[in-house]
Length: 320
Image (cartoon, rainbow, N blue to C red):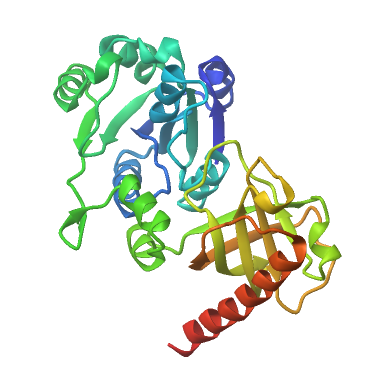
């Protein structure tokens, strides 16, 4: 998959892929859940019909994150199901040909729907354009499907929107998935995503505190965006296609005076140097919230208890 990093790289894209016809869509696509996958299926079907390629426009940061920072630079932003690099990998896995990264900034925020069409959508040769059931665009979200349909008629571009996709009589959405993860309902999150909820990242050096209490941990690099996980979890990790059970802590580590979020994984019966390796962490069940202990000995005792609970959870998941 070819990634177009902003409008300023369009000319290079056109030079490399001249006269290419495209079937496109646009959205945040956080988590790339079942509803998003239905949109991708439509544009892939259209690409086959029109002998074209597929392209997905997505914005960074998400609009909600941008507006939260506008209101208060220290504001908590909505958590991400998947950071943008993970999103790109998921698009590639879904066999999308091109992804168009649009920076959400003041210029894009204040762009009229008509200018968005002329400056963004008409910058490439679209033969079809598909949007979600709730899609709005342009300044104050004034642009809608009717405006797109009128434009499509004028330019001979097929404009489609997708029907609302339900699960248990409720709409599938990224916000519903975030809520399920936060509430420790990973079965529901998996049903809505169409796959288990995971986070992947490189193993990086930390403070090596775990080894001092005989519970070594792998520290996973975290993006700037907030994740919907916090606390202690039973996990399964994929390391180069090897599945290893473990326990994860996502938090600031208040016992040692930490202030920035850290994701630490203790892998059971495992003691190898895996720095710079990539771990895919599958979250099975939350065990408890993070809390501050009076000393490291008390923290160690709690972690040992957490490990026993995690092993029981993981062994039970295999039995059922």
